[in-house]
Structures are given as structure tokens and as C-alpha cells.
Length: 85
Image (cartoon, rainbow, N blue to C red; front, side, top):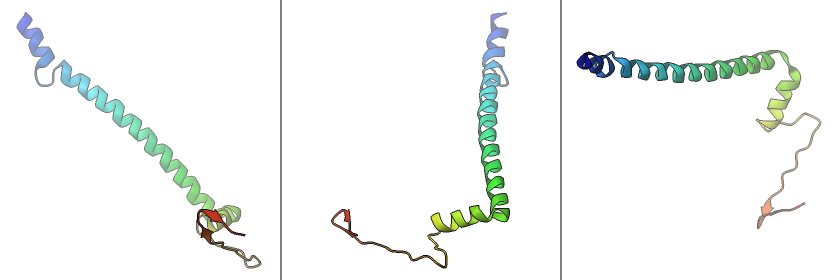
């Protein structure tokens, strides 16, 4: 009887393998949820880039460093760790 119990617990496809597979499933489900959230955020960003002119302007200004036609951009050099005016 004891030998059968040992075989059930420690053999291939036994209890230990089952527990390991359950942990793998939980880890993969968590990773899947994170990817799903990231995909939803990307889909929202794509939709905003297609339709929202205010968002497009925000991206152009803050991520691409662009300015509007009627704006003048001043860039200051940094001298010894301090910005000059």
C-alpha cells in the first residue's frame, strides 16, 4: 500500500507534477492578464491617435519636441550644473 502511495506522489504525472502544473497555470494566467491590460491600453492609444487632435498635439509637443507655428522655442545651455537665463 505504501509503495502505491509513493508512486502516486513521486511518479511521472503524479501529485508533484500536478502541483507544478497548477503553479505554471497560475503564473501564465497572471502574465496573460498583464498582457491583456497592456493590449487594451495600446488599443486606446491607437484610437486616440486616430481621432483625438488634442492628444496628437500633446504627443507631438511632449514626446517629439515639436512646437506650433506661432511659437518660439528657447533652449538654454547648462553651465556647471545650473541653468542660465
